[in-house]
Image (tube, rainbow, N blue to C red; front, top):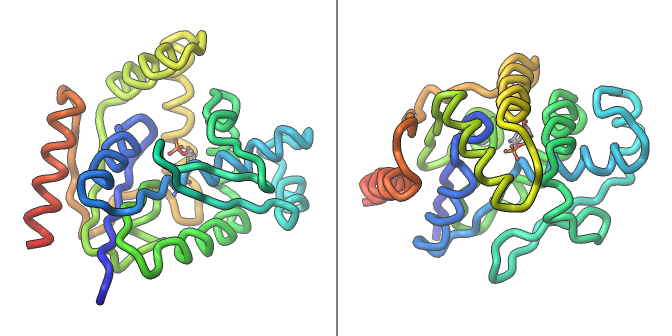
Length: 223
Ligand code: DC
């Protein structure tokens, strides 16, 4: 029996992971957050005292990085060399570092191989920046989720506050702009809309509206 692959791409803070997680639960699919993998590489570099922009330094530690994704009742658990780093990878420092290491082709090839392996033999919904264009070009459904910078920054700010991090709205907006620029302008597998993707701009929508829209879209396509 063939499996169903759903790709959700888009810039930081567009709501990809929250929406994808919810839809995966409703459909009984496995959810894979590929951004978490780039974050784990960045965390390892930071913990090893390596600048995330230092291409050679990051490449030198790549062979010693083992990333695994597991799933429990709360969702995806990310293991870095056997250690659960699910929470450690969510800091602003790691967010910026993830965007830096994601520019490096060797990092991307290592993670893309793992992503394709995880996607084989099961129904999945995978989110990231290059899922529809590069990781799974044959995905059954491709959605490009976006929203204005202002709105994405506001959502991220609320999310961080809820998690107990102290941060300023302006810093978050600056971080989002930095990552938009970095993720869209890198040479290898940049963030862009796949030719056959459906673009959804969620500016002004609340989460429930966005989930309903995406769910309707998927249902129509899977008919
Ligand atoms: O989705 P996220 O914010 O957790 O992703 C963190 C960074 O990782 C993001 O700024 C760019 C990079 N990334 C990528 O280049 N390709 C992906 N498929 C997923 C994330």
